[in-house]
Length: 195
Image (cartoon, rainbow, N blue to C red; front, side, top):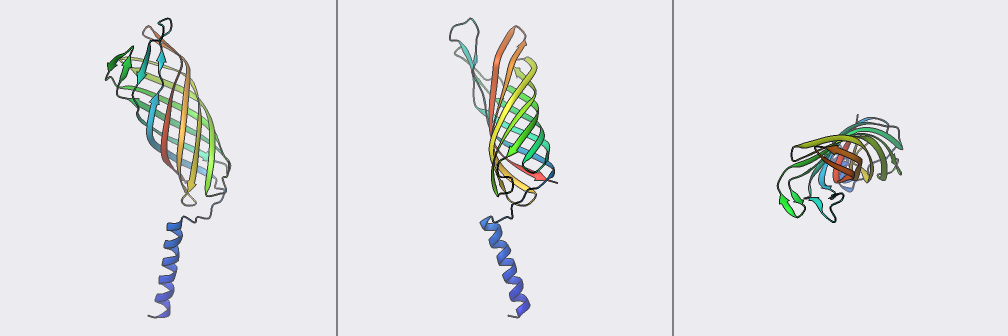
């Protein structure tokens, strides 16, 4: 084996080993990014007012989101479309198989606690608008949210993350029904690409 071939082989093996062991030089990156995630969603129970303990419950469904943002280093701002779905549930004890969905468009401010490290927990607060659709009824109202998660830098421009997002809509009224403090939560895994 000649010396050039040996050097190339050693260089390729060391690059491969560094990828497999996950050793990425973590640093503060800044710039625009795109993000997306998918996972599970839970629309929380809705209590009927003035009807005792009657409530509407929803089955767990799919949750996902897409967003664009700007990373300043430790802080980020992001515009995100978030959706949660349920394919059934029970209304006052009677099962239904109607598709229900909740969509939110939110502006978020997020903080990465260890942005210069490979692993970083993060937290975010958001404000926006949420639309609920169920059994032919729909309404849109103001909403706010909280996101908690942890991200892992796989390269200088890519991060994989786990995230839990909770959205609360203080009031919705449509078609003779009213919802106070309606909420839903998504638990997702996703990726963020810095460009």
